[in-house]
Each structure stands twice: as structure tokens, then as C-alpha cells.
Image (cartoon, rainbow, N blue to C red; front, side, top):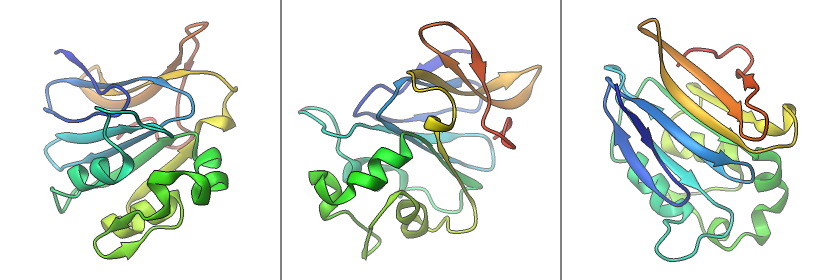
Length: 162
């Protein structure tokens, strides 16, 4: 099993056999959809992308290519994105499936995951930078985070599996 990283401003598909890693999540959002056979599509959105990084629209378009997924996970600095939405250029005209998106929850709703989403703000942990993992432990799906400065492991309350 390999670890496949999705770095800032990138999107990718991770096969069921591999672990998905979002390195360095602090002011970013990791957006992950899980297909029934454990394939994950994800994107690592940054507040102010610089070329060649993908913006939030491109990441959402990538994730939107696969329908009928089991869940959508948005993990990151949700509060900062929501509080500054109108001032973030890539958010001002974010349109998904013909819907104008007004906040992070709006991403899940517009992608069709109104009732199948986990939106978690890492600010409920300590203010720090985290590596977010969608992987396997003892052949079971696990979701965890490791704080980059001290190696402490965290889990999303109520969602230690994906």
C-alpha cells in the first residue's frame, strides 16, 4: 500500500489499496469524496492559489466528475473560509451544478451531498498544521490527522472511519 499525497492546489484519484494524504493542512480545505469500492477523489484547496495550482472551482469540477459517491468530507480551516468567503476571489463566483455557492456547506450541497457530508473545522483541535490521512489500519478504513510540529495524532469526532 502506497501513500498518495494530494498537495496544495492539486486534485487526484486514489485507488482502494492506497492511503490518501493531504499534507500541511492549516488554512486549506481538503475535499474528499468516497466511492463505494473505497476509491477516493480529492482536492487540496488553498485560500489564494498561484499558477499552476488549481482553484476551488477546478477542484470541485474534478470531484463532480464522479456521481453516486458514499460521502463527502471537507476537512480544514472551515471557519476562515466561511468568514472571508466574499473576500476570497476564487469563492466570489463559485458555481457548482448551476448553483452559486455561498459557504463551505454550500459546496457539499451543490455537489449533491446535502445529507452525506462531514464538514470538520481543524480549529476545534489546536491551531496548528496537520497531515490528514484517509487510509487503512488492520484492513479497516481509518481517518486520522497528525499534527506536523509534535506528531500528536487526532481523529475527527465521530468519524474515525470513512
